Image (cartoon, rainbow over all chains, first blue to last red; front, top):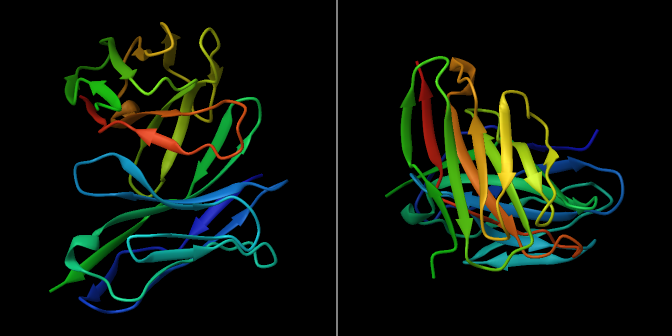
Length: 113
Length: 115
């Protein structure tokens, strides 16, 4: 079946460090791919997305590239800040007459000052 | 601009009690969803409504019922709460049922504890 696998956390980094959170997926067809972020006590919000192979999504210094050949959508940021501490969810979505979105388990990121 | 609004934000129930979680969106979205979030399991879809007047089961529908009251509102009902339903519940909406992207807009969540 369709699924999303992302690296387990928590991930702890110092401020200004480079961030990578790995995400791979299994899906029939050609889904759209997303990264959502959840700050403490809040709901999820879209961070970035990519809708077809080789697309790069970017927002707030975060980037991810839709790699069809490796079925991956890894999240990267060159220099993290304390304010980036949150839980990050990789997800895929496709239209089956109503959208079906499948989420990974989430990766918690802690950034130390 | 409220977006997706859920009530209540917190609720404690005893086993066997019933309750309804309310959700409303003001973005004129066609599709609405209820998810539950449990530690280490990401978000799992309980029910969704692709458009006004339709509802469908998601991955974990047992023990829940839903009502799409109108285009704005989508409620989730627990008829007889069980401790296994202790979770954080999120309502979400998306712009088009027929579009390709499917970006979700979430409420702030409702934390439910069943004793």
